[in-house]
Length: 125
Image (tube, rainbow, N blue to C red; front, top):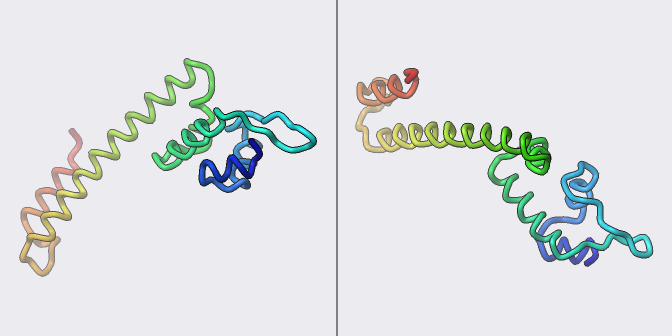
């Protein structure tokens, strides 16, 4: 398929596809009469790239994911730990915001329950 067809199939602009190729995130396609020609598997690779970007992986991390097994495993372990910490932080933030919605105090920072929750969040385990 041409780059235009690939862009249409994935909803990704052709400029992004070319960018990913330049940065070795997509394999260079074969060329016919000067035009890029992509195999059907290129759709899945682009979906994977988009999914990783939406999950917060940097381009360097995406590139690392495509490397040899030991490097990929190390990056994945680090990213899982980062995601887990982010999940904990988001849970705490949700608890604080939920309390703030229910609290009748004009100054939420003066609320003892809110302050306790903040202290618990900032306390090292």
